[in-house]
Length: 258
Image (cartoon, rainbow, N blue to C red):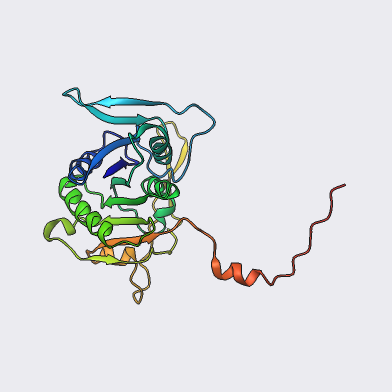
């Protein structure tokens, strides 16, 4: 199996290295990741400036992978088109330092990289671990790869896109994997107003995503209960119900320009 591994924390991130070691048990791994951290860049791509890429080597002189001066989506596009020795069978993005649950999937560079893999018709998975200064990435990578192997044996015939989140508590005694939808509650709009040493005003976002309704299990509520979450995503953002209703709208043509 040919595996493309990327992330949004940068090519030197410990979560990337831990996941690479475990993925090597599944097949040949090509690492193509951003040169610097790209958290929160979403699905941005580089097209107004040249996209630079260079090989990175470890202390023993072995090739570590490719470092790309661009976004996670750039990395996947360039890897599949130019850098991978052959077309990947699987794209994995992670392990991200911090969960990507709820509407964070719209902001996340980690998830965007997996989405880009899905654009190419390749099975793609984003993997995130709850933030911890003493994060146990090796243990999280073992759990993630065990779940990936199960996904590949049970998935539908068509390539699919998944978002996998691992709470820290799951590393202690293991945890159930809950297949759940994304929570859609918006983040709070709270900002703390501060001044820097030069007297300039700046703002620090402090808003948090609220608890989802208790009667509905989502990725957020399942994570808060200590469960690993797995969510199938899709790239088609069309609202199908509205599309069907709008077929009956009476929309006239626009006037000709003068």
